Length: 87
Image (tube, rainbow, N blue to C red; front, side, top):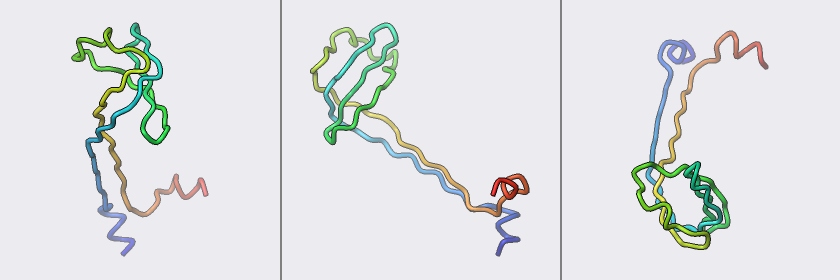
């Protein structure tokens, strides 16, 4: 089976759209960065796309809905010679 893996690795990619309602913790208008605190208490900073035209109306303490993508890619294959050296 390893010879099969060496020839053609098994790979997979997945992307999902996530939507979350969160509280605005901080805003940097110049950098278009908004820091949000999610419903589970996690804090994340996003760069807001230029297509958002009314960012100047968003204030700390506001609740907003943010849509973003989460992606994962992986492959299963035999290690290369270089990877074997790192063990």
